[in-house]
Image (cartoon, rainbow, N blue to C red; front, side, top):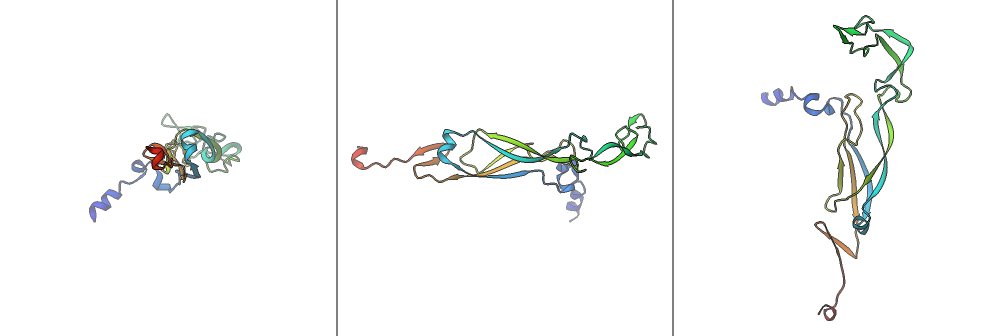
Length: 178
């Protein structure tokens, strides 16, 4: 249909934040297993470790580092400027650096150990979402995915959840109840 083709013509990085264009998996999904129902209400704060991709600070997320093995920038004729503005090709240095960054292996991002403390679980949901705590995009600065934590509740014979309430099951015979 002509209208759908027209709409697809505008589905670039501006409409999607760049996620579809490069097919990056920015959202980071972690399964932390089941949480004990009693602990959920009495000791809800737990800390977990995870790894995520972050921008490489060693090469400033360029994937290359300055070295003697650099070439002259042809875009700005090694001046570092085009029409008075810093050259986008060489970032204003006048040189094109070709030595791959050892820290990120030229990928602009590297894995970093992180921790997150979960202070409150939602007993009615098996998913917690932390915006911007997922992987960083290697193609678009400033775009980060979400950290999506999947969990479950261990069943408990003594307690049950109704809404946000924890209810203790107490067996009563009719004589005790009256």
